[in-house]
Length: 205
Image 1 (cartoon, rainbow, N blue to C red):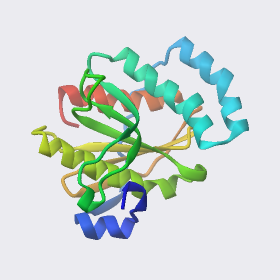
Image 2 (cartoon, helix red, strand yellow):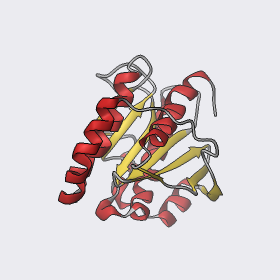
Image 3 (tube, rainbow, N blue to C red):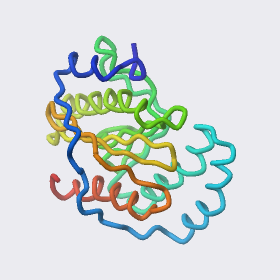
């Protein structure tokens, strides 16, 4: 069993999670102006990603450039990992490969403190990606506690490239944001990512 095998019912029962569906995680969105280079890249390659319309194309031409800019602009605060094995507890099924992990650490050669796990939605279906994302969030929370990192909050994100949906787990409470965010407003997406990564480096949200 691995992250992608979980269902919502399995997650709720196995990890005693309380699901909260009626909460805006980011009622005030801190917009952040993206670079002219990223604007140009997205303007040029987003149509290609949508024309190819595969998970790989959307990841390479939309998701990765946004996360890459986050890392480059905040290299002293975060590290970015793509497609790595994240095996935390095989007995509980918390093992497998993660599409992306953002860590609250500047160590780019070793994962130390995951704060965001991200799943590319299969067949452009955000809803179907939620259970896998939650399983990875549970694993990240457990990993942090095992490594004596005091903050228990971990965020997740499911993205088709064009649509982005955020989640948060704190203790046993799992929040699924009521809103989705769209690539037509990349400043909002970047603002949320920075609030999670940099804001929580200074204080707990």
